[in-house]
Length: 129
Image (cartoon, rainbow, N blue to C red; front, side, top):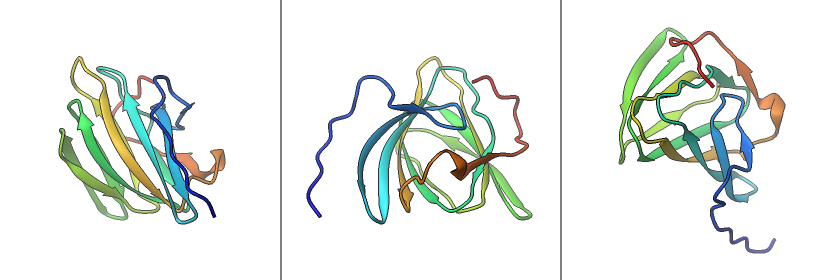
């Protein structure tokens, strides 16, 4: 195994199933890192993941995230400095509530396996992306 070094691209590498922009960073065999961004005043599609779990850290913007796992659900405020978890199977949806994009760094464990990983679920807000 070698080393990997990457610089953040100015444009997205992909669009996530939830509609957010993704800029892929480094990956190893047990996890990957990416930057997720949602445009101003946008609402993502609600999704869940089949096999991966994620940890997010909000770096800019203001918004909210809805998460539901089993009978437990909550909506949390997203502001710079907030970190949150998305366990495998969690239904989640997020929104940007300001005129500046909502941007988060996310660690995915194991690394993102491909398009069939996420599936759509009923969310709490009407998606706009």
